[in-house]
Image 1 (tube, helix red, strand yellow):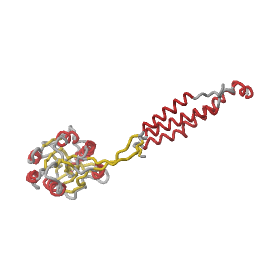
Image 2 (cartoon, helix red, strand yellow):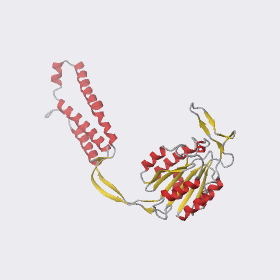
Image 3 (cartoon, one colour):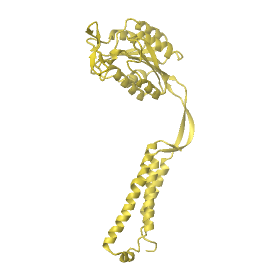
Length: 338
């Protein structure tokens, strides 16, 4: 037997902790009140019709009904049968910028943390699609290969920070090439998406050319630019003592602003590509983006997954509880023949 809700078993502790003490106290209380009305010899004469044994049985029937209800709440199942489920989906590689500029707080709590929250929320909406994560700054790292194990993706996501890459910078082109050549290396020619999340300006790694090359492999790019493309935002730095300052270069504060024009070219270099701008004051909802642009697209047949099916049997215990309650109500406290 398999239980679908094992936590409900904790309610069984209510039997020795609550129900039994309540019934013991009620029997004691009833006896004490009767003693205040008459002496013991008189009680034995006027209380001859009540069966303490039947009172005890009625209590046991109600306790057994409670136990049956708790067992039903655990969602018991048995008769396992293997069944193969065919899963369909797309291969999606998330390219997440982890450069220091992603620490900017114009998008709360920060650009990077907001992106991680959005990716985590996205995982809640997926059903069958394979997900990979590549972090990038001055170089690129595959943090999670293509997988349908969303719990593993969450573990990889939790470990991502601005320390996830060893070099500073924003090499978008290198990240796109890493996704195309490594993440999507053994996949088919279709059903592949790159979701690029960045706030950076990049002219050194030839991102548009990398996007055009990826498009030849059937990869669609959805670029998401974080931040303001005009004024930008300062990059906070916290020292060992917890003091907060801002990144300086040549005696001036560094202001990070998104290069929306380049990201548009990157996105539209691939058929069906899309550029989305997330400016301060707006939210990054990857679930909505996925539903709008990816979930509705064509999907490939992925490997079948063996699932075990069980017969739900909670109804049996609900029926037992009802029978026990009916039996309790029909059971008289009086002795036979009285």
